[in-house]
Image (cartoon, rainbow, N blue to C red; front, side, top):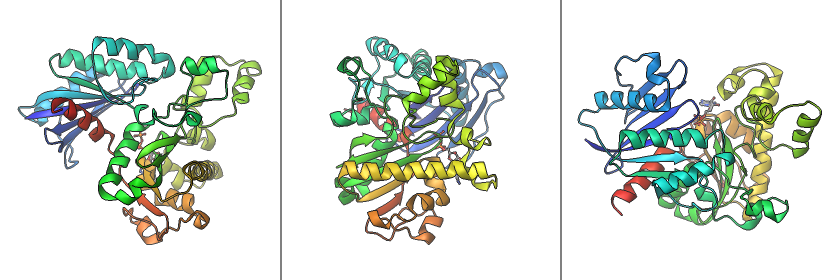
Length: 387
Ligand code: ADP
């Protein structure tokens, strides 16, 4: 069985996708806790869990070992598997990369230089690429950048009001979650061409969360900026913060950059505000007032950004929810859309509760579209195979 493999390597996780030559989904693999008590789950294209060979903790010691373990499980679950191309999610493509690219030594060297722009993600992404280059030295490998979809946004959404030299050095608003927005834009182009041609806000609400304004299917603004910390509060990330807070943390609290990084990436957001959990399901089920306040702040920021993005777009034709929370939480969608009649949003409560694709009464169309970043990566790899 000839197949395209997609890889999404995080700090301690590895997500794998397997697609046929005609881009049908064959299966997914998910490795958690690399470097610790690693665990692997493999499902087929219908989402059924497949049995996997026995594993030992040392099978998950590094990204390379985790990849080898997951591939052994894929070979057991998909007899005759032959990987013909590998597509990779790479968080940062810098200023110059606005489209997927075939991986070469030169590109790897260039991407490694971008690690300071995304120190918590880029090195792990590239560790995944190196592991795959070793495992499949003859298969073409393609890098797909989370920043690429936003690279053509206008200057006012690309810059900060700092002296010009910082812009030249790459201190810019990159925007992330681009693979997800690319997928949603493509879905709208095929199924809702009128909306695709218009003004759409997409809310990608998962553990990481951001929103993007699309005009004619192109990103013109995003809530994420220089890093994946900006904009909305997230599971454990703060979202937008007054830069004066950073000065205070350094000067008055004596915190180092490493401590501040841990605080903003790992201890803030829903987890920090609630003191309970980064998991929206737990917060929704809790009667703790701090959990309620965390949800209040989350939805308040989404509503605020919705207004801001609609202004940037010059109006609104559609709002699309995606990501784990956006696709599954009728409660959060209802809270976001409450009292939004002034902008043209009125939800159909029954359709919202049913997680239907179209959930509004109008005139602004509100939709729930499950995102599929792996498919966007697989398509890019496919395009390299059959240009
Ligand atoms: P990641 O960014 O890791 O891919 P996901 O897109 O899977 O994250 O989203 C994870 C988030 O989705 C978690 O906060 C989880 O609680 C939330 N979530 C998943 N299902 C539901 C649900 N039915 N109701 C509310 N939140 C949900």
